[in-house]
Structures are given as structure tokens and as C-alpha cells.
Image 1 (cartoon, one colour):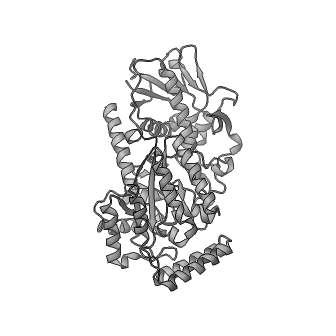
Image 2 (tube, rainbow, N blue to C red):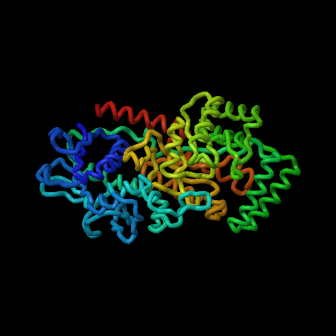
Image 3 (tube, helix red, strand yellow):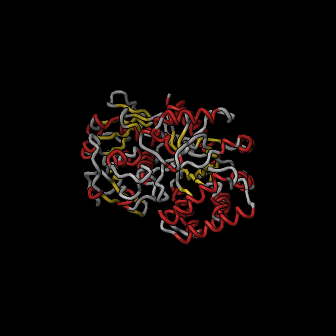
Length: 497
């Protein structure tokens, strides 16, 4: 038995609705089929009707979700969304924003109809699509000095929801409605577990590698630029001058720890594997020194990571985000030194353009990306905390590449949010709990050199590993997470066939 999803919405929105339902039902692990009419529906099937429900008005095993005409018409254009249109509903003890709805906020979110069917009162599908497809990035022209989509001015900032995975909460509404529909049913659809071994959520540990050794002539120049940035750009003269003094003393003492090795040793104590993203190119002033010139250390670091079960991925340089030639060239260079080609990436300085960068990564043969994130604020740029395939607005379809959305970056806490280490750790724990509540994926970016350069923050990564070890989390590298997710989807495809 499966769920038959009938799209009775506006034809211009059908592919977009399909994108949301495919993402949702693959996450739920429930067998499903999508149709545009009811003629192929099996009597044994549960029916989910999105849009005009008149055909199924007397059917009991049916879930109705209204399709908002406002939503369908909105997505025919690329105009900024007016946050004044939001309807706030109460769900799970909190206020949940619905972007497109003809219902009132007083109306029950879930209603049982006289026929026994269930109705979701609000169009959670169009709302989910807005966030999951990163639609606002197509409508708002504001960009920061690195041409990144900024948190300031985003809908997440205006609604104060960046640290809530709101699309996962829409999914929870759908899941609860399906549970109500199947209550007492002896033939409920059997779902596939979300994570291995009954784990409640997952943690992906990742590292962008900017240097193999702490100090060289090139890295000293980079450190001077960074300290200057703290003083001039981030307006933190105390931190900038203090860091410069510590770095100068470290150079004079001849301290030169190998950054990736330190993180590997920490993770080894907990039996964890992680992802290390290496650079193989870059000529911009924003790119760190290319450690590839030190070929022996470069290969030694890669071999050490792979021998311990970690993933070596690509850290595409500053200008690759809209340069397919550079992206392909850097991917090809890493192919020559790693043991396998099925690896992922994260863009340097999180420089990313939707959907251009995903297209270039996909064309280069990268398996996944893990860049999607607001550099200035920890949280959920797409309102989602699981692997997903991005939406291509020009093809009106899903891409092949996968996204493992980033959740927390170390320098967001220290440089952008200006938190001290203790407050930073509290923020990490709070968002880790938010991910756990929705059974999601927490992706951490900890730069290997971060704890070396900022000693006050050095204990924080160890404390995170300790906290994760006492939780019910499945922990792995990006590749391990995605391998599990794809194997899970293969099981689902076999059930659907």
C-alpha cells in the first residue's frame, strides 16, 4: 500500500508541488506515487489531494491540502514576498508562519471531516517550496561585498525564524495528518528508518582546510590580513590586536602544529570520521596560500585522513562560484590525489550563487555541496536540516547534485555574532537540540586552524564531540551521511516499483 498524491492545483505550480512532495515523502520513507488525476488511484491507497478536493469529497482514506491561488500566482513571477501576508498558526507550542493561505489563523490546523477524511487548513506546500527552493534569492537583489545572499533583509531575519527549521515543521504537520488518517488502520504504510541503528538524528563533522602547517611566509601574510579584518571590517580592535600579538609570539617561538592532524586526533578518541575539504587552486587575494606547493605534506594529510575513514573533498576557491572552468579544473586536480571520485565540496568563504554554483558543481562531477548557510547567522537558510536535492528554477525540476545544508560555522559565532566561547557553545547546543527535535542533520564546520589561532575557543570542539557522544546521534562524514541517505532512497524506490 502506498500514498497516491493527486495534484489538483494550478498547472503552473504542479512541478513545484511535486518537488515538495518528493522531498517530503522521501524523508518520511513512505512509498508514494504522484498523479495529475484520480483515474489511476487504487482503492487500497491512501489519497493525498492537493488542490480541488471535490472529486474525493466523500472518500474516507483521504488527506486534503488546499492549494492557495495566491501561492500559484506568486510563483509565476519573481517579486519579493511581502512578510505582511504571513498567517501565524500555533503548532507544537510555537507560532509557525504560513506564507500562503486563505484560511484564518483561528481555524484548526488539522480537521477531521464527516467522511473521516483529514484536512490541513493551510497551504503548507507553497510555503515549503518558497524556503526549500531558496526562492527569495531569485527575487531579492541585495548581496554582500563578496556577492553572497545576506541574512540581513532575508525573510528569516524579518520573521526571526533563522534558527528554526520551519520546512521540517511543515513536514511534521503533514506527518501528524497522515498518522491521524491511519489511526486504527491495520494496513498502514511502513516507513523506512530515517537514520541507522535507530538513531534519533545525525551529526556531520566537516572542516575547510586552509593550511597544513600553521606558519609560512604566505600564511603569516594571510594572518595579518585576518587581524586587520577584525579591526577594520568587524570593528573588534581588541580581538584583532590580541590575536596579532599571540600570532607574533607563536611565530617567534617556532610553533608550527599541523592543523588537520590536531582535529583528527580529537575525533579519533570518539571513533568519529569527518570531511576535510581541500583547495587545489585559487589566485584571488581572498584565497589562502595554496598548500599544494608542498606536495609531500599535502599528500601525507590526505592519506592520513583516508586511512582513518574520513572523506577528502574539495574546497573550491573564491572565484569558482560562477566560473565553471575553474570549478572543473580544481575538481580534476583533486581527482588525481584522492582514492575515489565520489566526494563533495564547500565553497571557499561560503561564496555561493543560486542556482549557478550548484549547476557548476554538478557539471564538474561533485556529489554534494555543503555551503547553503548565512555566514552572519547560524541556522537554516532553506528552513531544512536534511540532505536534499536543490531546485533548478529554469528547468522547473530537481537537480542531480545533493545539498547537505550547513548548520553552524565556528567563525560565525566568534566574528559575526561576536560571542565569547561559552555563549558560543550555548548557541551550538541550542541549535543541536532544534535539529534533534525534528530528527534532522546537524552539519558543523570547524576550521582545523581555528582553535590554534584562537586558544580561548580551542576547548569548544572537544566539548561538542563529548556532547554528541552522549546523544542519540548517528555521526559521520558528508560522504557517509549521503551514502546512507541514498541507500535509504534505493529501498524506497524498490517499494514504489
